[in-house]
Structures are given as C-alpha cells and as structure tokens.
Image 1: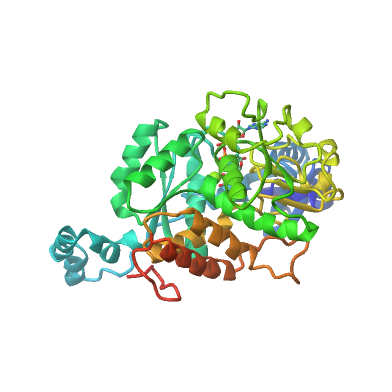
Image 2: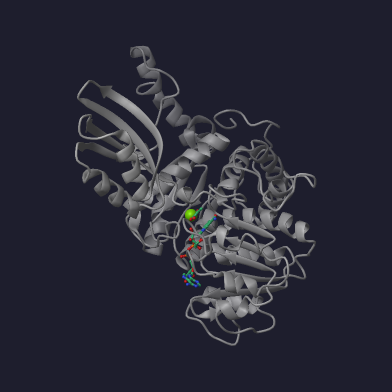
Length: 479
Ligand SMILES: NC(=O)C1=CN([C@@H]2O[C@H](COP(=O)(O)OP(=O)(O)OC[C@H]3O[C@@H](n4cnc5c(N)ncnc54)[C@H](O)[C@@H]3O)[C@@H](O)[C@H]2O)C=CC1
Ligand SMILES: CC(=O)C(=O)O
Ligand SMILES: [Mg+2]
C-alpha cells in the first residue's frame, strides 16, 4: 500500500520562482525531504526572469503540510503565492444544491408552480394526506439527521462540524440510488427535543436516516421515532453497518471454510454500530460472540449503568470471558472493530485462531492499519475507500432507501435487513471471491438493483409495503 495515500491528503502550492536564483530540481528535493511527493506540475506563467507554477503535492499526514510549506519558504528565489488543500477546495460552499425540476419562464409558469394554482394542489393534499407522496418531494426524499455527537470516530464535534459528513451522505444517496437526501444537523443533543424535531419536520420526507448520534441515546431516539412515525426511520450507523458487515462476513467465512455458528467473534466498541452488528450476527446464528468496550469484556455477571449493555450481556459471552481486548481476542476467529483507531496490535492478532478475519471498521483510522497484519490474516477489511474490502454502510443505505421509498414501506424490519445483506454478499460469485474481494465496490451498480428487489420482496412478504412498485425504479421515485 502506498504510504502517501494513508490520509488521502494533497495540497496545491502556487509558487513564484526567480529563475536566476533557483532551479526547479532544488524545489523538488526540498519538498521530497520534507515528506511530500510531487504528483503534478502546472506551469501558470513563465518569462525570462520568473516562473509561476502550481505543484500538487501528496502528503503522508496533514502535519506534514506545514513542514513542506516551511521547507519551500526557506529556499532563496522562491515565494509562495498560495496554498490550497484539494479536499477543502472541494468543500467550498458545500457539496450539494437544490435544483428546480421545471424552469419558470413566464407568469403562467409562475402561477402554476406557485400561487394561485399551487393552492389547488395544497387543497388536494389537505383532503387526502396520502397524496403528499405523489404531489411533493416526499416520495423521493430522505432527511439525513444528526446531532453531531458521534461523527465518524471523531466523537462529539457538534452539528456544524457534522455537516460535511451529512452533505457527503446526501451526495451518495443521489449518485448511487437517485434518492434526494437533505442534511439536517440539529443544535440539540437532548433525546426528547431530537424526537420532537424530527417528528415536526417529517411531513416533507419519505424516510429518516439518523446518522452519527451517539449511543445509548440513539437506541431510544430510533425506537420512539419508529413507533411514532409512519415512514421508515433507520439509524445507519447501526443497521446500515450491520447489513454490510454481515454481507462481508458471509463471504469471508466461505473463504476460510468456517461457519458462523462455530466461530468465536470479538466485537470491539459496543456503541451504536457494535450493538447492531452483534444483533445481526446473533440473528444469523452466531453463538460465541463477545463484546468488549473500554472497561473490557461485557459480561452478564456485571451490572452496567447503560441498560443496553445489560441486555447485550444477557445474549452474548456464553463462556463468561473476562478481561481486556488483549485477553479475549486470544483464539478468536473474527475481530470486528467499531471503536476507534489504532487500538489493536500485531501481537494481539498473532494470538487469534488460524486464518483470522480482521474487520477494523473505525473511521477514519481503523483499529489496526492493514499493512501491519496483512501477512498474518486470512481476510482484512476496513471502512475506508482506499483499501480493498471496504465494509462501509455506503453499500447499504442508498439501495435500502431506494427500496423503501419505492414500495412506500412503513418501516425497515429484520427480514429486510437480512435480505439486503444477502443481496450484497451474493453479488460476488464463488469464482470471483478472494481475500481481497469479499465485498462489492460501491461503484458496482448491480448492488443497488439487486438490493432494491430483494428488500421490496421482504417488505411485501412482511406486510410493511404500502404499494407494489414496478420492476425498475423510475427516475425521481415512484408516483
Ligand atoms: N465502516 C462503517 O461503515 C462504520 C464505521 N463506524 C465507525 O465505528 C466507530 C464507532 O461508531 P459508533 O458506533 O457510531 O459510535 P459510538 O460512540 O456509538 O460507539 C463507540 C464505542 O466504542 C467504544 N470505545 C471507544 N474507545 C474504545 C476502546 N479503547 N476500547 C474499546 N471500546 C472503545 C466507546 O465506549 C463506544 O461504546 C467509529 O469509528 C465509526 O467511524 C460506524 C458506523 C459505520
Ligand atoms: C461510515 C459511517 O457512517 C461512520 O463511520 O460513522
Ligand atoms: Mg456514521
């Protein structure tokens, strides 16, 4: 793996060189010695005396940016005009926008889309509220709601800082499944206030994707909203992650020829994602599953303040193992990390059973970097886009919401999640499956299609679909 891509970070330095004082080779060496790697050079202008160039420089981590800039600044005959970070440039002004579906050219158009004619449409919905699905954006629109309390693995960074992630999710919804999604970051972390607010905004939406809300509040928020709303409410960090994890594990276990009933599974980080991933594995037949959090293994002989952990303990850790991650990982066949970066060591992995499977899914930094253990594990997966086997909920939420919007499901139940996992897993054939290919790429457009039809089938079978849609999705949702 190319080290310079670990943080996926690159900067563009615009510099002005006085040709009599410095040669470009000297600039290149200074950048390289400071840890940078020049990946593109654009000459902006040049004359006998001065040359202005844009250098795109890949850096190992963001701390190297200042080292590189300082090294260039020290050179005689060079002045830095500007430094821009390509990721920040991409975020200028946000990543999404609202675009009208029909142009407004004249007064007639105006009176149709707005007053007075719009009033007839409003009255029709008032008489029959179900018409909101066919006459408004509701049929194809999802709210991506966060309170910024557990953003990726960055922790409680608040609603403003959470926006770039939620905007990113909205882009993915549209790109992969044609779903219009809107980011809504709430300036409250109070459970009741979040529930009240989401209920109050729900008329505009056909589904609610809760995102990056910390545990245990996320469980109560999701449960109550599901009870009190007639559209699906899906906490993606729980169920989206669980669906994709189970899909990946189905294929990884086939590779090592082990069965879910027999393997010892250690789940590290019993928060939103950890609880849901454990639940889906238990429903799929896992018997020897142990959860570990900061205090060590979760065990039913202890009583926890977190009521979710008491219930969790009752269903897991049958052999009552105690101790830290380092102790319980011994002899485990599968490690699933949903906690934070860099807490697993090569030595820990060496104590696992033969052919260990390591899914280090914390973002943005996994529990262990693949390069540290690739030679001693049978299968390695992370949540990141820059390594093989990306186990990330992005493989689930677009297809899942495409399905539930199209069949107007009232909820997303266990059968629908298992159907989604099977759709993802089976998109890789026996011939295609390798240790580097247990999960399809998010760019594999067969995944959303197959998930849509399997999830709709499960929704109809379990009686939560309000309509039977056509085979192929219509652009802009079903009317
Ligand atoms: N790959 C993927 O698709 C997804 C990855 N994640 C990642 O999983 C992690 C957890 O996310 P959430 O469950 O939403 O957060 P959360 O805040 O609900 O749960 C995190 C849990 O990890 C525990 N933890 C923290 N440090 C620990 C340590 N040193 N040892 C053991 N446990 C520790 C916390 O006590 C907490 O219970 C994050 O890094 C997130 O980015 C989450 C959802 C999807
Ligand atoms: C992928 C995701 O949802 C997370 O890391 O929180
Ligand atoms: Mg998340």
